[in-house]
Length: 168
Image 1: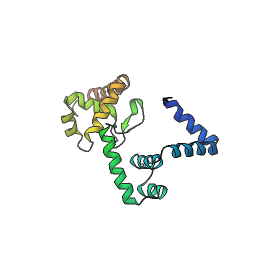
Image 2: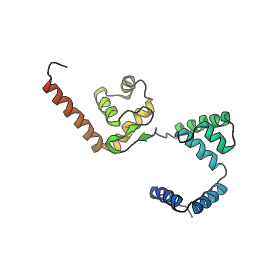
Image 3: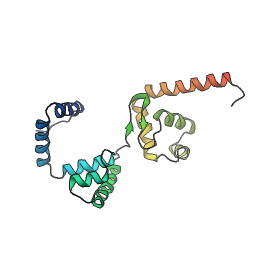
Image 4: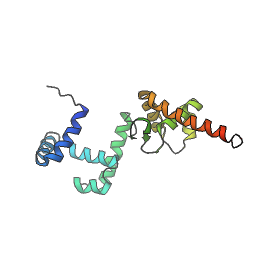
């Protein structure tokens, strides 16, 4: 029987872990036994997402730090192959790119002015191209929220220009 993962289940597993840690530990043990290598894969993913350090991962998995780094490089290459978007921090109008800490609406606003991702990359030289593309993809999913933020910003700019016409 094929099992479909639903996102609400993750939260319920977290609740179970906090309320009945021995039952959650038993479930994790069964999962790890049925999927060899899963623990190491999860630990490497945790390093990638900065939940664990390389040394913490090495200690938990009985690998050397060099082995963790090698596996992390492979993990990141596989993630890029599968087009895993860079992580975003927050949701809705406050969403930001995790690596660049740029607000999604700011990226979208500049993209509209410049018209291409290439020019956008030049305007944000410290932000990876895939991060910028992730911001644009996020904006496609939540256009109303992003548009509201841009409009609010533009209103502030318009008011400031009206108040201080010689400052621009």
